[in-house]
Image (cartoon, rainbow, N blue to C red; front, side, top):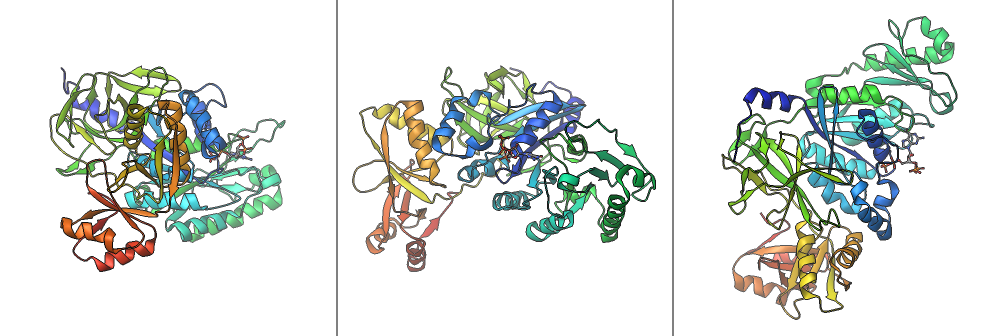
Length: 532
Ligand code: G4P
């Protein structure tokens, strides 16, 4: 079949207009609202409320199952693509619940930039901080949206200072709030000296006003003497601080441009979207075992960052989500999975949106392609055509919660299929005890996931099982001479020996203390949290 027939200039132009990003925030800061408003603005959806998620996404299992049931109409289907002007944007979903942070972590490997939403009354919260750390690790440029300006907010200097102090990045305001809460009047665009007025319900719409600077006396009439003076004082302090926005510094993770606004009331979204298309980076070169691979390379390459089982009950299939990194991906292309060297014809590449899946003919760097996955792909697999290479593995979080799954009926095959497929999705790690019955031990990053696994096995695979929690706190692969490995569990209290699906030896530990003790007393073996 065809390989890369597209002229290189098309590829270069397609790369240049792409923006692939994720929105990170602490639950409740307004990520879902902002997503919805961006999609509404872009015309990608027609109705407010079409984007699901909100609280149910991060609440209890039953709510989560509802989400599963209606996953078809949710942006939780990994990625949404939409156009704004000349630009083609792909927004990757990052689940809000802390138990699913590993999923989010993987997603952040597949984007080129990030939008960070902060609640103006709360500032930096724990989940924001954690997610920001991942962005830092990956040097992902971050645009900041300080949300809910329509409500009483913290002092803007305070918020900027907190970003700098807690996150360690220069926060450069792009606009400045005029008043707060009940007296919030709008924002002043610092670069272009334009006042954007906030419209409260029932008030006539006021057009943005271009002035010469914050000192322009026309502002006295427009804002009132006191708010005007306040604006002058504050903007003088901002310019006195001397940090003006530097695009390269943003791309280098040294600056984050900060926009104040309110997603719910559609305020400040237009300039923010403009920044997203103008400032956020297009796909960049990625490191592989063959060196840096530019997106404009003539050879297709990409990697799988997410696998989702049972996307659609009617289809009952598993979808591997591929992020295209270089070249052009084409339908029916023969691609190689770098992990096993296996060749696969990509005969059913999809784009997902809402409940629909649509076959695509081609995709460019930055795009996300869903491949129906009859078990050939795992998370982190590199796929390529024409030029063999491998992207670095996506690190896994070590499991911290364990439970043993006990089948309550005799549907062994369905049970095994379910466990294998959900493991492939990266929902949990599966270990088999070396001694005793070979009932699988499930290891997860968060406690809620064990409940979710049980519910999904029942719901999607029709098997009823109990998941009894186990007292272990950590699991490690053990590498070293087999006699030494065998001696460990015999000699260390609070441990149990096991193996993974491939039969590689592992040890479970009941406490951090047992793990440290074992490390100290067994210098001849290595205990690995991540299998290289
Ligand atoms: P999340 O995805 O980050 O968790 O937050 P989400 O968008 O669900 O927003 C959390 C709550 O904050 C929602 O209210 C939402 O309406 C509100 N919100 C978002 N943006 C703004 C804003 O600019 N101003 C104000 N005042 N509120 C905002 P909720 O009542 O908790 O949920 P819902 O009933 O609206 O879904």
